[in-house]
Image (cartoon, rainbow, N blue to C red; front, side, top):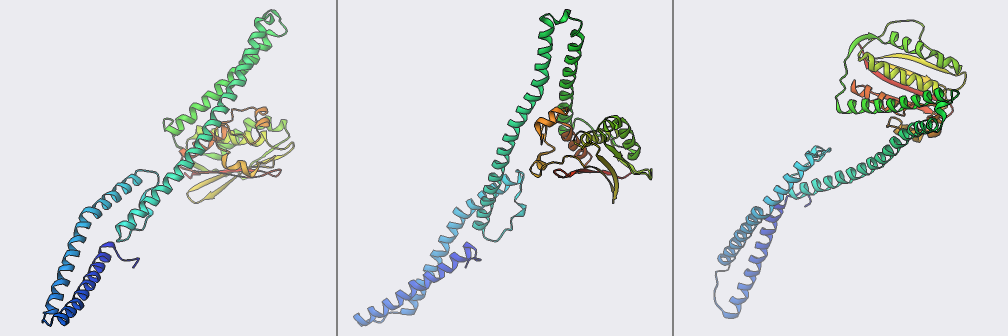
Length: 351
């Protein structure tokens, strides 16, 4: 019975009711004939009652179909169209011949979509508040530094040759930090909106990596970290934006040096993965706790806030890296274990 459509079910009910009414009339006419000793055409009357009941029931079903099911179908179409405009369409729903069941499935699906959307919006609201708090904190620090240096100079430090130039240089560093934060925010915004266009070209990524390693070698050496690079010197050509790819490599190498162990090692490897080239940067540094990994690429998100700020940087590097890689229609992944190290890997199209 569950698989029957409402129309078929109503027809069955109409036939059963007609049979019940006709049977009742049949036995009633027999009783009347017995009491009054009059002959009554029982079968003709029963047949007439059955046909009349059946036609009346079918007419009622037709009216119900016109008045009710057309409205149900219109409501079903409305819900389907509304869902198709949302993030999750109704394509996953298996429709049956039963319009009421279909409407119920659509409404349940719509309710699930709204529930998921509300949960997503709640998470986004939390992230938004954290983001605004982080932006405020990141900008407030250099602003307060600048204010302190300027006030010291105005209070007489400007005439003191032992501090005036030193404080001005410190103020300049704070201004540079603010500019770096704003530039990084602007870059992320442009990458998200598509205003910052990727300009792909064919180039040897091993040469680019060597250039980045040479530029960061002094910082690594100061910490006793060895940057290990494949020795075969085999060219690996990719089709990507050279400048943006350099940004990615610089950010990842700098992070490996910042959070690497004293006298540690950062290994750079390349892998052939079909149509793409995978670049892997692995260090044996402090590692990242498992709970921080899902949010590692968010703006200003820091796994160790106090230590990260002491190390410098805008807190936007990994967010920029993620957006650059995604702008190339590629992926970036991270694996890490506390006290063991971290591995970043991303792909670029092979040229």
